[in-house]
Length: 307
Image (cartoon, rainbow, N blue to C red):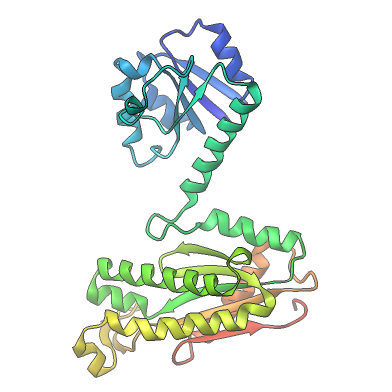
């Protein structure tokens, strides 16, 4: 874990040595240095700031840093000499957490590790749905494969989403994506939530992983809920005409029906897959086939091995 330690007392070897023993790399800087540029050039996993800085000019630098969209996700923790602040004072400080130098070393190590872990998880969350993103999706699927776990891996794609987005705008499109996320997570909750993983690849694409024996029911539940809810996002005119007229990706104007979902499912059974890419490719082939069908559909690839 890489950390930057901001202090106006860089010669405090005792504090520096203690912090260095709990991180893999520690860069000590003072408030007079260009901290923002330093963070951009070599983003750390954690920023540690001496408590004295919080009451001085360094506070403004921290507030500016935490307000950035590129590296503002990096957690900022105050380094305290002891528990000597009143409770109400903490709420106004530009920090996410704190450590106390007088704590036991193991407690300090755990706290630093938890901060970095939380930051990594939050950075990968999709900003719209707050579901795990690509990195978490790939990691979870690879874990299933490596453990030779018998599981179903499903890719969910909304059909006719682009023409809807073109007609109704991105704001309404985001509402559809949020509704789809809720549909999938609610379906997962009613099956066996502790055994289901749901992720958001991005845009109108989602992934879920569940026990192989439950995937048929899961898919049917998602499709039933989606087909029931989606009509509420269209105006009366489009509902009456059975769709909308819009230009496709090829620039040709045509009529598109209501949005549907295609769910491509592959089964990780009998050691079928050795890495994520194989499962994703098989699912992509299935999804191409499903998109040529009318309505919402799912297909489970039950082949025992890969050709």
